[in-house]
Length: 197
Picture (cartoon, helix red, strand yellow):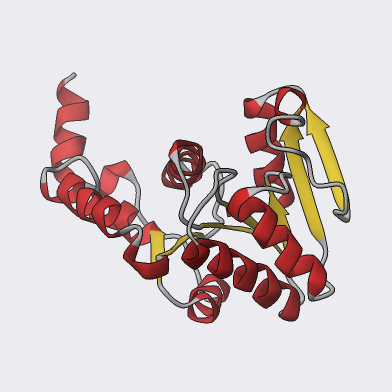
């Protein structure tokens, strides 16, 4: 099994760096290969180092333009250099069986929301998760709940986003994951609107 991990290349506090290193080690310990953005700095580097030091396999995918900026990790099992960000995200998704986001910045959120959106649209049926280290994602999760309350997010789609503060528990939920049995035709309001348009 391979898990795609979204995380940051920027400097972060020791809390997040340590957590990323533990994630890498835990995945390696469970025989799970890591797919990530290919950098050796920030939580990206900590994740990769944790997995490699635990004897795991790590596959990096990095755009050519960012090889110098993010300082590509040279000790990975595999490193794929691609043309741009779209190719990076597509390859990371194609190589992975599941997705988990660690604390990060705008790029991490972009990757997380794209994977979650693809799941909602049926592009893939992979579990998409968030590891809520030290409550980092609490404000974002409040916004997700707000989107649901305001009618912009179906409850079934909210259920697709698996959230936990314990990686082992999250991975166990990945193993049991089945996409919600839901289509737009199940929503009578949407069905009525669609028939009248």
